Image (cartoon, rainbow, N blue to C red; front, side, top):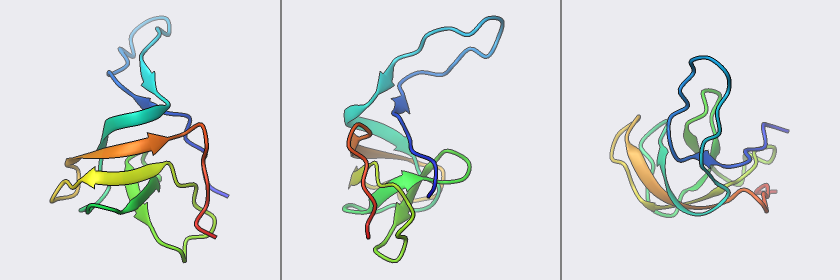
Length: 92
């Protein structure tokens, strides 16, 4: 099985000094950075670098965190997605 995402950071971590708290979306509508060109209706999970990646029924070991609502048009662009990291599933 792959990594199980626990949510989507809603702000950048500072990375300096002691760890600080950040807001995390566990379930709801949020923006995600796409690992590739993602389209409306794509089931998404995490890629190796932490971006959103589309998965199909053939990807039986990937945890699905949500579905794309508004596409990005190019790799690295932002999509709008409905996510639910509290109730992950696979496509098997």
